[in-house]
Image (cartoon, rainbow, N blue to C red; front, side, top):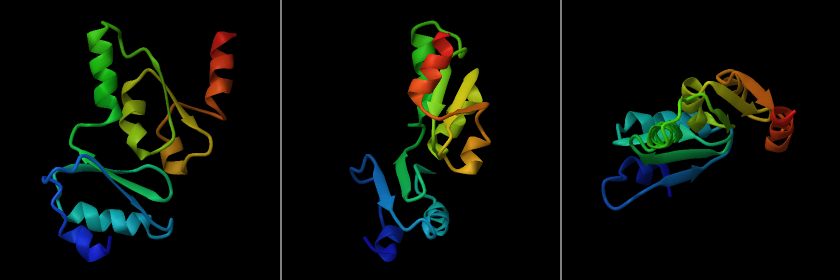
Length: 126
């Protein structure tokens, strides 16, 4: 898909999610172009190469809050993430961990970092 095609894209026509794969040095500028289109979607980055366009309010923190409410749990839970689409979840959970390999701006949003999910589980079981 070309940039011109992305600019004329209508996300209201039967599209659930779009992932755009790009060179890492072009990701942020392409994301800005997409944001300026004012599509009725949530636009985040997944890693250094992927831009994710998905339904509004269809983000991890929404699911986390729903599950905690459904099971009558507080947000005193552990969450683990590694990308921009995890930042809102980090801000709402009591214990947030980011994978150490994540981008620095994402790492800065979590309370803690970890080298792996297994390492975190081992740490919490002690």
